[in-house]
Length: 213
Image 1 (cartoon, rainbow, N blue to C red):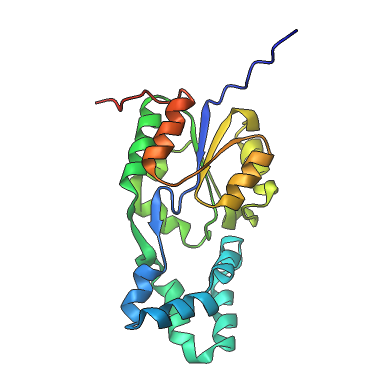
Image 2 (image 1 turned 30 degrees about the vertical axis):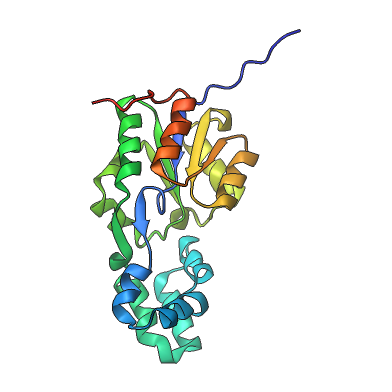
């Protein structure tokens, strides 16, 4: 009876926001609201996640701001701030996760990123976070006009960089994206914290039990 050798997982693909980068609109809107409940209502009902995701999928920001401001004229200034002061939504790097990324890089592990991000604002992140230069390739949803969890954007990553799903470990903090990657044959890890991520990469034999240096 022949035994099928399990695939070698030798390439790691990272999501960015929530895994390596602290992006949160509350960093900005806590400066613009003095009432937490009112802020949460605004982010749930006006500048909500689904609206922002359309920019991640390629909709131009000027069009998004214009349409939403027409629907909520009383919030026009707050809506405009979402783009005009977008850079204030960026916190620091998630340093413990970046340390894991640095370990993988030091080991020579091929690194890629697949992110839902507007093509208009991604250059701000590129300028701010030097570690984004460590990736051999980055696929940005806004540039592709595709958005996770659509399997087509995962396929685009694989095709563009000549990767096979069975060689990839994919890391994301959104369950729906993890599920989509797993359905394509990737080993998909739901990111919770850097310690559990590192343990999973040790188990995959991509990192040593103890950090080097």
